[in-house]
Image (cartoon, rainbow, N blue to C red):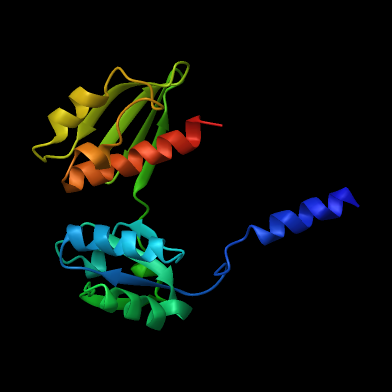
Length: 183
């Protein structure tokens, strides 16, 4: 009987939008993507920030992927918050698939997580941040100074101390590193 409870529990953890069509929200500026992400996640929507497919790049390096069935509710939520996407696109064509922002490299003793243009490398045994690189934003040297040499459990959150696209991308890499390294 406990085996069936285990299966039932796993089934319940599947997202309610599992297997449904997806859409993408395209914004003019990265700051709008970040604001929309906060709003939509705050309302409990299952969304992902990703890289735009080449066919619809518009200057902003990020898009939001969402369950297409919730398009009207999502657009209404964003409109009420004063954030409007430039374009909403259903993802039915394989060429319009969003690009995953993460690239992971395991170097044995070290793990490097790349999110968009930012890379964060940790020493796996002690979980110490040993390198931060990438981007071209003015706050990258400051972010590196504040985080390198600290454990991923004690380093400041990049989003709290950085204010650019590079800081946002580093936050994504930081969160993914923590997800992969911490129990």
